[in-house]
Length: 133
Image 1 (cartoon, one colour):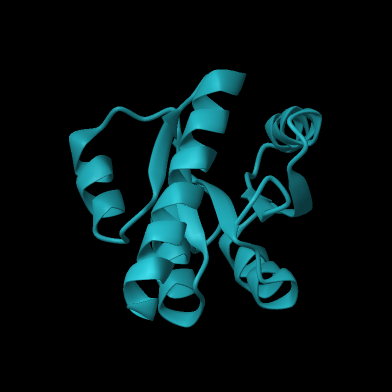
Image 2 (cartoon, rainbow, N blue to C red):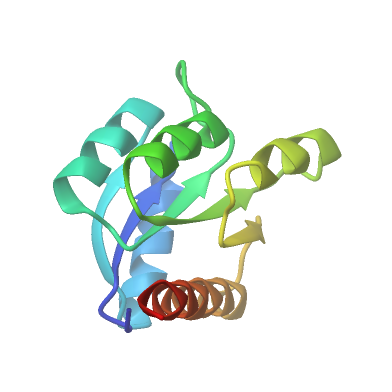
């Protein structure tokens, strides 16, 4: 994956989602869509096949971000980076079970976003190289 990696944003607060999209596009990332809830995230993952999903943990609706990430993890090979304003240890423990490629605390900054994405890209490349060996 390169800077041209396809990124899906899953965030139920549209102002936050649009701000994040603009930040990513200013960093030359390819944002393929925004989903506002878990069901929409699953549909858009199937449609766009993103390389990276920036997933808010606290989503409105029946599926929170962790459950949504688990479903996506079971169906697709997308890397998930969590976005969260929560510092709850139980939430973090649940999130870890989905094998995320990163975790960004809100409010986030451009450096934190870019570092998390680059680590996810690097980890994915390393995993692909191991599978090829």
